[in-house]
Length: 143
Image (tube, rainbow, N blue to C red; front, side):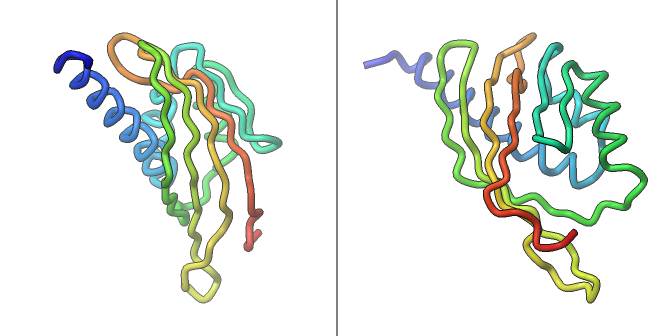
C-alpha cells in the first residue's frame, strides 16, 4: 500500500487537473483569453480541428482571440466524465464536453458535444495542458 503522502499527492493532483478542465470551459465562456492561454504549458499545443491550431501561450492567445472575435459570450461549456491517468509529473486524460448556446428565441439549445484528449504536465508546480486535442462527436445544432 502506498504511503499517505503518496495517496494525498495523487488526490491533490487529480483535483487540480479536474479544476483545469473546469477553468478551461469557464474562461472560454467568459472570453478571458489571457487567463485561458495560461492554462497551457509554455510550449503547449491547442488542436481544435479546422477551428484552431496553435503552440505556445502567445500563439494560443492570438489564435483564440481571432477565432472568438468580438462576439459576446453566449456559450456555456459543461465538462463531464473526466478520465485521468497520472504518471508522476505527466498525465493523460479524456474529458467530455457539451456546449449549450442561446437560440434566437433566447431558449437554451445544445450546440455540440465532444471530447478533449489531453497530455498534461506539471510545470513550475502547476498542472497545465501540454497538448489538448478537441474532437466533435455530435456537431453543432446552431451555426
